[in-house]
Amino acid sequence: MISQLHQMQDRLEAAPHLLRIGRLFSETVLLQVGADEYYLTFEKGHLVQIAPGPSKKTPYRFAFHTDADALSQFWGFRPAPGFHDIFGMVKIGRAKITGDILSLVKNLRFFKSFMALARAQEA
Amino acid sequence: MTIEPITGRYVTVTVEDAPRRIYFEEAGRGRPVLCLHTAGADTRQWRHLMNDAAITADYRLIAFDMPWHGKSLPPEGFETQDYLLTTDAYIQTVLAVIDGLGLDRPILAGCSMGGRIALQLAALHPDLFSGFIAIEASDFQPAWYDIDWFHRPDGHGGEMGAALVSTNISPFAPEVERWNTLWMFMQSGPGVFRGDLSFYTQDDSLIGRLADIDTVKTPVHLIVGAYDLTCTPEDAKRTADAIAGATLAVMDKLGHFPMSEHPAGFRPYFVDALARMT
Image (cartoon, rainbow over all chains, first blue to last red; front, side, top):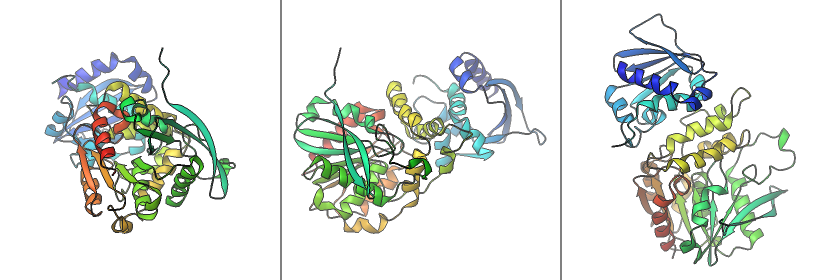
């Protein structure tokens, strides 16, 4: 998981249009995959820190909770219905969003695009 | 250079006792098909079918922008109104356009909220139509989001709305058409998507009317994409099952905006639907 997060970090730095879309996004996001926690700190759209948990004292703006299998499907090429989108995963009961959801919605294109950066580009 | 066969004009009709200047496009000749766009978008969703010479050889496709959408201005005094679409206003608008354009019993093809209103009209005004193609349409969809997210002074409703509806676009959609589809939502006027969603997510009056639909007099065909998480195949099936004689097609690789997000994938389903309108 850490290697994929670092890959996403690199791909984000290589995507100037995403950095522009996320230029007002300076927040910490909790990504919970099963029992594993990852605190992702963004600064003006750049992912500046990837801190594995667990942590009970790291504040975060919102959290995306899912499981390893669902995330693996999400990152696959042309995922099955529901696994193709983070809100879709919520709709089919394979993910949950907690915290300040409005902050997520205001930055939804940025965060959706970021989460999809580890997606396979071909079968 | 290519000049497309689609032509656009305006017609002024009366809805809720006030004038509405409606923009409409059309292409083709033959049996009329009136096409209704989804919430937060406009006639451009139908551009590919209207440019399909094999379809327009036998059908006259007409699409119009609902007031507040696309090139149809909102009514006078909109600046002091809270735009909230209602079933009655939507029905009045569709009927006014049919009357204004002199359409004789068109097929009605609507997507999403347009599909919802197509089924309402199948129940309430079947004699004015010769068939109904309800795309990504169901009896009722409660919101799984807060519609007020999409009209607020500290966020861009169009960009947030586009990011939301991207949930319902299939990964099989060509990238260029995915983004053309999302662009319409990004361009949507302030509060328009919210006002459309208010109608779509709060009015459940269709549920009690489905049994009134007579498919012997006017055929009803539903089409739904597997990647539509707003109106799922299960939602469409539940709706079709409640209409005696209605038929349903499920598109495995398409989402909520099939005619716009993946025109080549949608085309055979639309051609099949037209063939069923007898």
